[in-house]
Image 1 (tube, rainbow, N blue to C red):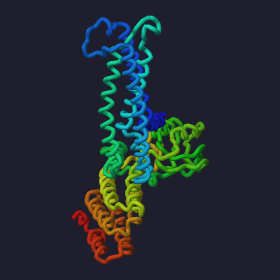
Image 2 (cartoon, rainbow, N blue to C red):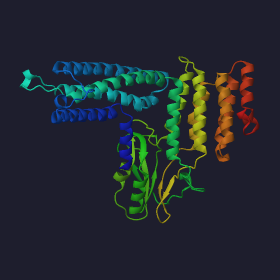
Image 3 (cartoon, helix red, strand yellow):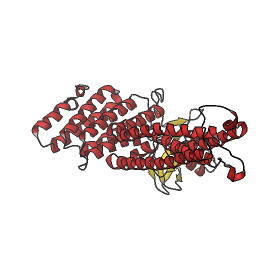
Image 4 (cartoon, one colour):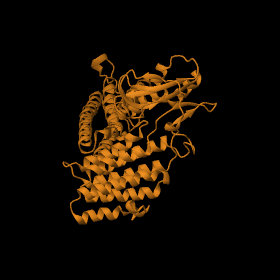
Length: 440
């Protein structure tokens, strides 16, 4: 349940409607409150406050109508700009960064403020009364003044939004957001004190000799999160050993094996609780999927290397940020793939993301599609060299292997001998095994 709530909350934060809806509700409450204050205290008649709106009924209606009409027009313009930015991000970078734009707090606040101001003006307008309406003239001066203040603030937000929208589609900003999200996920999932020396991997756990009970998936989707605590509680309560078969981010077909279960005693049916603990969704999310964060940066680099865009500088920036993320990851303790009960017996076995796979996801396709570009390949092997010097020895072999593959690809596809020599010089550390030579 906790994981499902976390996934639901994660989706809400990345939506374009949640923050605007909250701000609109606040605007409704503010309009009703200020109109009520005007009705109770009759500020427009009894208090001589110079900064309050001092016009009559027609003036108040004119101001509110102007504010409301302008705000709905500006809101439509802002929404159109946001959609154009989403289209550009999808075509120029990768569709996987669209959540970065829809979840951008600046976009959400600007849309919410404009919609809230329109709603506020509309509600205050309905409270204005002339003598011809019901015999009593009522001008909510405080509420009309609030509409003017909101309109002035909206001008400032519009200026901010124009700058923010122009900056948000710059390659460096998109890459920085993707890298920051990935590093933040690493810090959350791989804290400095996680794991313990000698903790067994999932492949090292001895399994019972008795046949396992297979728990099939009753639906399809990507594994977005796994509620480990719920699985441990279930396993301890029913004397089970549960091994979850798919990794976070993998796609599960209907009827595929979701988990294997060994019971040390007669246990109650555990199929539904295990299915509830494994959250499936229509797309991978960054909630718990470190591989998706790495893939986002790699996909931006691949798009930059495509013939239609041909932007190797953006690709090299992605390589730099991938190196930063993987070095940070390699220097952290690895999450436990094995969860035990209070008695020390193994209860839940999970498959975490191997470091070797993350290195492959990060660099293999960049190596393949950038093999003919000497600048990209030179930068790739140099960054791999700097990474190798910074990671623990146990994490070095995948990086050295990737650098050697990059050198082999460059020898085959870089056409000019001088360019091949540049790449070979940058990757000499991988051939000779001199760790750290790639940092020069």
